[in-house]
Length: 381
Image (cartoon, rainbow, N blue to C red):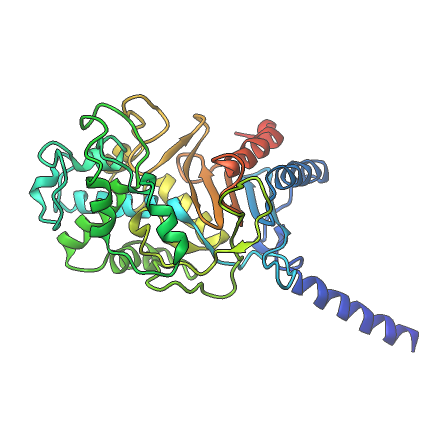
């Protein structure tokens, strides 16, 4: 009788852990060899400290060092209302990690001789009159040297978006918001991270292909790689399961993140940051991106040419993280994520999804990445 009671108790305990995301967020889930307990303890401490520092409700983290070990962890809460934890299967809004997909499609079109990186904007009828369009090249858009104004820096953008996060915007509306400010620099002379560039690239993809950019990303990348949990959304809803995203009161970005921003229209950020994915899909995508498998060797070399004016940290839709890793970070109300790996496609990979944005500093998620790198520094090839 006691044995049966213990068995029932054990089953209930396992079901409880499963509901909290414990059993579905472990290194064994991906079949890899875990790091030593000492390294795992240090990683746990590092992530816990950053969660406390930046008031992050929940995180999903994956760290892989080929031949040395891996660590997958889900911490905190993925849904404040229910108190349940995030899991490895949860979808998140990947924000500007989307730019790696957008840029790859553009480079594929270049491989297909349907465009050239030296093409100027005036060669494409996009329905918008962009200043300096006869000088701004596709390369300028890709490496953030167009000199255009970033539409998300417009003082009216965020109040309008936050007043109705599910409202539908058009790419033209976003570009027009930028155009109203004129130019901030001559093309090709100054690096300035800018979402307007990637909205224009999305418009070019649709103009050249006659398809929606979502359909092109799906057929060219998602379907080819078998990414089952990655989408270019067309509605505000999140696919289940998902880690809820939160923001604090916008007037106090250091306060607690309690306003649920999970349900948001993808249209106010479009090809600059609207995509949704999960941990293992992004790992697969990162390794593909780093290997150049979907591009010619020549175009992959262009993609990883970190030679923008004033910075060595941005290539063609790819970030260079301290000279160690490549990938991209992303932030959008409710989510702040980072996904990096070593060039070549089979090296150290670090992915951090957090369900808070904004925080008391910009790029809070990269602070998680820095601390993780410190822990595994001796394990780098």
